[in-house]
Image 1 (cartoon, rainbow, N blue to C red):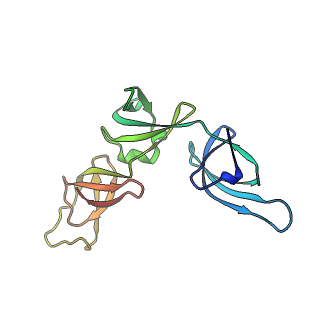
Image 2: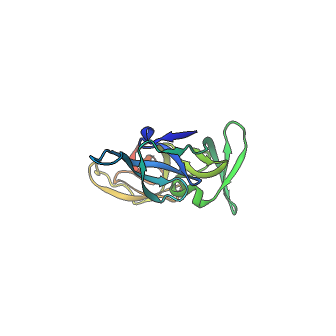
Image 3: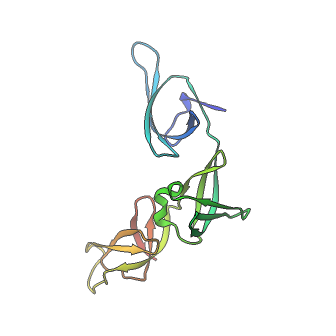
Length: 186
């Protein structure tokens, strides 16, 4: 199966030279002279590199063999991070590189989407929001308000985020995994 340049849109996953890519941006160009073309900016799903390429209008690209599996994080050992498929109970070990930026949010029993390319894990997609406990922060002072500013707080996963002054150690907070921002106390 193949995609034509007419099907290009942001977020479309394509394959070029055996590498899965996601289209970040594209622009159809119809010059006054010559054939139309599509200027495309793509990001590798494996390395994260951004690449720009121009396609002739109507050119075809391959559809990648991608699969998403819902998996739960079990434990970490010297080999890597062990995840289990929620339906089949099949286990899979991923490396730090395969997990990438999601590492700061991984804790036991967190459900994630593991992205597989030709059966090999290449990435992890987190839920949009996670509830995580604060293990270290300066104590909140009576009278501090929501609009009063922020302070650093270390979460149970080791990630440090900015939280309002009134939030205390031991409290559970809702965190946006896309921006690493505090949303609310839970």
